[in-house]
Image 1 (cartoon, rainbow, N blue to C red):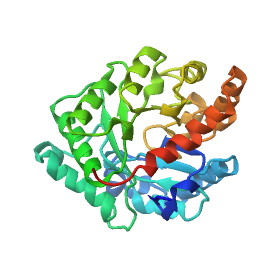
Image 2: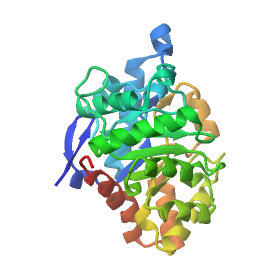
Image 3: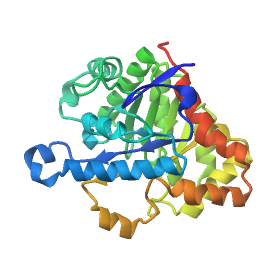
Length: 314
């Protein structure tokens, strides 16, 4: 069986199990805690992360994909140290979110691709932890800089075979433009997850993405300000009914810590935005709605495994 690199070493893809395909451990403002270290209590936040991920493991979560890029404050050493203490596989990423370093403005796509490939083949941030997925983001739509970053990610993907997962803005339909860029770079769109697709109940739009081969990430369960859980769940159920269970993955886009929302505020405003919302609430609702367990297993186990099993440059 193929293997996938995690924060604590290689794991056979057959052992990924129940997988949340779009999560974070911590998200932070780059440079903030280097400038004001008193704002970051590493020990306390590690204890929080270990507790939350251990709780997820106790309720059947085997793997999370941590899509925290450098402009979201990726901290490889922190995640590696968390991973050593929890029975959960943590797959980390290279790539970039919506606030790329200014350095990328003057760098060309091939040079940026070289940086992503280095993360994948050699390790990240001076560690031996290698990236297992490429994260790219578009919001509100593809502009000149974003086009270059998408192409850089596409080229790194072609050189390594590591899958792509995106952040996209459903209000502009830019998932289709992401696909256009990837396709122009020769990317097999079936090796791409178009993320945050669950922010809309427009099944015609979602089907248009899947018809081109990509998987869609129904991956913001618990963020009700974009779309309530009931509508997100109903959209998944409807797409399962018309044969698309094999092209969806489920997740929360949650975290143990983010510096823009204090934990107490997050718990008050978004009480279901955590690693266990899908297990505790969404899957039971899908079963009650009539979604077969086989299709739930497809979305939670088989689709993630298939995404990581397809390996090698092409």
